[in-house]
Image 1 (cartoon, rainbow, N blue to C red):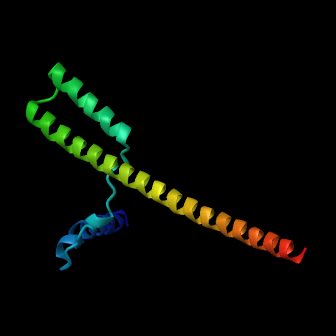
Image 2: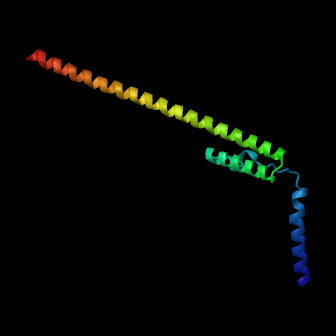
Image 3: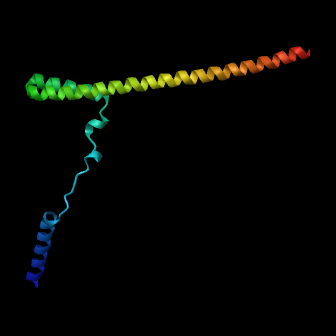
Length: 125
């Protein structure tokens, strides 16, 4: 009885190991859904990383080739974040200007309305 159970367990294990090789399908990894740690990197973190890279390079812990490639990568990330911040700042100021203009126009409309009412009252007297 013990031999039968152990044979079944070994057979099951062999089946589970060999089965992916025998199937005709080739599994593709979905790389578009992978999330990278650099996606959520802030501008301050990019600057801090560049600073750490410089310290490690100056201490001799990092080869020059790696230092240059990593420094270029983080400088590009920092430049991208600066552009995003500048663009969002411009959008906010444009929205504020548009909001101020609509407020100004509504205030002017109210003033015109009140002036018209006052003129009607004066003409009536």
